[in-house]
Image (cartoon, rainbow, N blue to C red):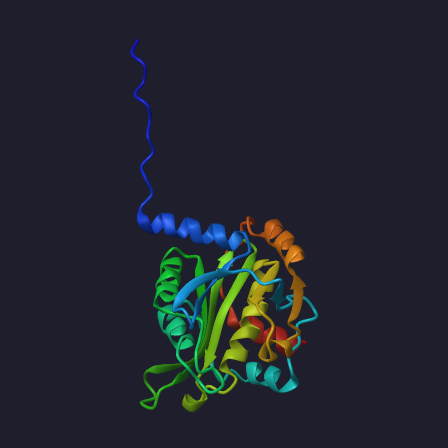
Length: 234
């Protein structure tokens, strides 16, 4: 009897290899940033991590709660991912440069195509009252039961005052409903501290990441009406 021919599994494509590498880096606590001085993308892991709480420590001001309940914005997910990340890369008042560059944008577009990166978007009717315009949003990477928030933007000049904040409120409530355990904001800043964002030491973060990154948690369904109802009831 002849020996069976050895089975050599096909080599992964370049894109598949890249996706595996990126997921491996995120699972080890790293994330990419463009260094404006060198123009190179670097993988970084700070000594402490910014965490937006998914429990009762998450704080929503009375005015923002009212803004969410008003339904001023139409909130959707994953209908304009490319537009969201490209908008996050644009300079704005108080943010003359960003850590995003074309290579990171292409990377996250690839992750989105694979169903791993997601956006939440705020829309308003355009001037023609027929079409809509994107006035705010955020995006990030879903890694098991961990959502790695990457960036957010709003366009007050288009009527999107507080649009990114509204999207964040919807994100937190959505993650709670879907069973996510951790919302990683990377670093604490003044914008996020108003929501209760706190610092978690790197060692603790890595333990939490290891505990939850392999969980099987689905992004869908997305139900913004449920968030409005929850805030109205609270």
